[in-house]
Structure formats: C-alpha cells, structure tokens
Image (cartoon, rainbow, N blue to C red; front, side):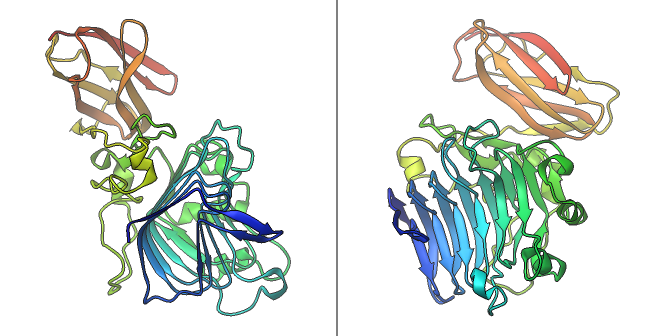
Length: 381
C-alpha cells in the first residue's frame, strides 16, 4: 500500500519491456492498493495472468498504455485512475487474452473493473498514438462498469473483429461487458461519432453507456493544482443510473457515484501528482434545482449585487443541454467556472464564492450550444 513508482520502464528487447509495475501470475491473496505509476517509459501497469485484486491505482504520464492485461488475467479492480500526457501515451486500456499463437488457451482474460476514471491526452492533443480509450484484442474479455472515459484524441473504443477467435466473440458470449459508463470529449458528442463499429455502438446503447459531460471539477496536466477529477455529483442525473455491485462480494465498495472519485480526493498527499502540484482540491459547485420546467434559456441578474464575497446566480434551460457559466474580469480573462455540466430542462440556482478575487466589475456568461447570455456583477470588498 501507498507506493509511488516514478521514472521507470525500459525496453529490454523487441516485445520485451519493463513496465512501471509488472504483475505476473499474482494471486488474490496479495494486496495491491494505493499504487501510482508515474512517468514510466512503457506501460504504467501490466498484468500477465493471475487473479490479483487491486484498488486505488494511478497511472499517470506513462509513455505506452496506462493499463495492459494479457494471458488470462482474471482479477478484480476498483477505483483506477488514468491521466495521460498531452504529448505521449497510447491507450488507457490495451486488453488482451492469449498470445497470437494460442488465442483459445485457457484461462481467458476476464477481469472485472469498476469505478474507473480514464483521462486521455486531450481531444486537441497532437499525440496521434492516443487513438482509443480502450482496445480489446487477441480474444480479450473483461468488464468495465460505472466508469468515466474522457479526453481522448480520437475514438472511444475498438473491439477486435477478425476471422476466428476474437474479442467480438467474447462480447457476444457475454464475457466482455461495458455497462453504465460515461464517455466524453473524444471524437464527438454521440455514439455515432465516438465509435466506428456498428455492433459496438448497438451494444453500448443497449447497456446504459452515455456520451455526456461528467462535470469533473478540474482537469489539468501542469503543476497549477487544478487537477481534481471528483465530479459535482449532485448536479449530474446520470450518476443515479449505476449498475448494482455483485451481490455478496466483499471486495467491492458499494459507492453511490460513477468513476474513481466521490467526495474523497484520494490522490492527495502520497502521489507524485499531488507532491509536484498537479493535483489539488477544488471547491464543488452545488447546483440546486429550482423548477423542473423552463420554456427558454435564461440567466438572471445575480443577487445580491454588489456582493461580498458570495452571490446567487439562477439559470434555465428548455431541454437537456451542456451548460457552462464562466466569470471574466475587466481584462476579459476567465477567472472562474461556476457551472460546467449537462442539465435537464428546468431552472437552477448556484452560489458563486468570489473570496479569492479582488473587488471589481465582472462579467458572467452562460453558454449552451449556439446560445450565449452575459450579465455584469460587482464585487465590493
């Protein structure tokens, strides 16, 4: 427990590398929890067979895949986090079962992974290797449930579809499952855009996979303290649509959120991400529902105004929409994001705390699709 593995990983020879953490045929009696692989020159973690169960894993800024499993890995996982560099890193998950010459060998890979948050290189990254969030190949199976996949340069997922033993066969046999997950900021804003394969789109749509904004508090890859992958849970309707945990399995914590983080920012204090100032703890935005109906977009005048240090802002949307409300100073600089998420039709109220800002005149702007509404407010300390 509580191990940070930093600046590791080398290529020994072709197809033989040392990862940040290599786990070979380790059994379920071993405890692996709160382990970070940071800046490995190959994969962050690779599992070769075995049944080890792992919680609270962090794979950050590694040069190849964040998580890789092969050769019949059948462990359980919960609370796995990925953050990839904007210039390097391949897939967040590259999942295999057997070697090419023994694809039908047993046991087959079938790990069950719950509450993951995987963040790629960014949708505008120049990193062409960040082509999929997940790729299943070489007869791989396994499951991802109640997880978040976001910020990938290209497509969300590819499932191998070839003659003979392949990952599609495992999907159709019910041995590869992707259920109750959120996908965001990959190649587009719907399943048609983020997935090329028709059979994968059909499967995802039938199994509670949604392309929506998960409303994370902050995503950053620099040491500005603005990485906080906790969601604003109360503002997100899709977080209520979770898959039930396996009955009677003591390994899985029965949590009430999707992704690797709830209220606890568990990166703090022991990870390289925390120690070098990338990860921080940002204040949650508590958005309250005022009404479940609205006929148009609106943004109210804040009250009180002038204010010190907090004020209430109300807004409305006529249909389910992605909404941001940003605050700008007199120089036009964005100094705060008050709202960033998807909201059902209705009216909402949010409290903006400006304790960290100087007195002055500020603009706050609601944006949703082609709609932009701006108002002015005065902070007087």
